[in-house]
Image (tube, rainbow, N blue to C red; front, side, top):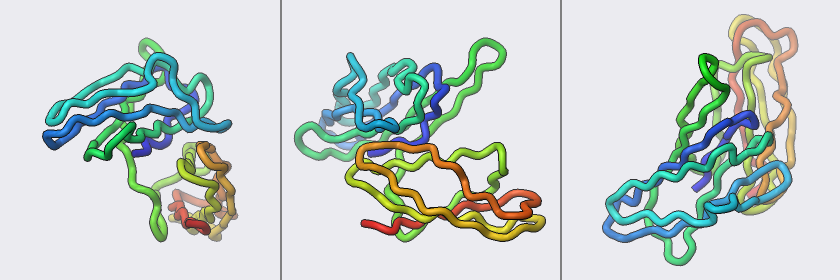
Length: 181
């Protein structure tokens, strides 16, 4: 499982995993950072009992770099669902977000309602180098579509500079298309 898009300024990350069947799951925990896969000290693995939920506090696991959590079975594959709760900021300025594990992008994936300054696209290649094309649609109130191609090294997560429609007015959609398998 890959839990993508943990922001570089995360102050606390809590991993929650659930094994819906009767079988227990043992998972290797890694962070796909911009420089490669890192195993968080003290949280190398997590054991999830069948039919139960397990939560693990990973702290500020990203350490100032964007990342994605990668969960891999240590022995046999058992169905598991997982997500993280991310905290950013402190005190009255604290925000929280919940990020579920996601399936790999097949033919394409889209994200709507992006803005030129308020959006971040985080791409992860957990099992090999990936080349992807990202297309920004025309703006909702005007503009011309734009595309960029990115290569994401194996085992890394990259926050990429978004292609922004020229003459953008309003919001736009991003479409990600893998160019490699």
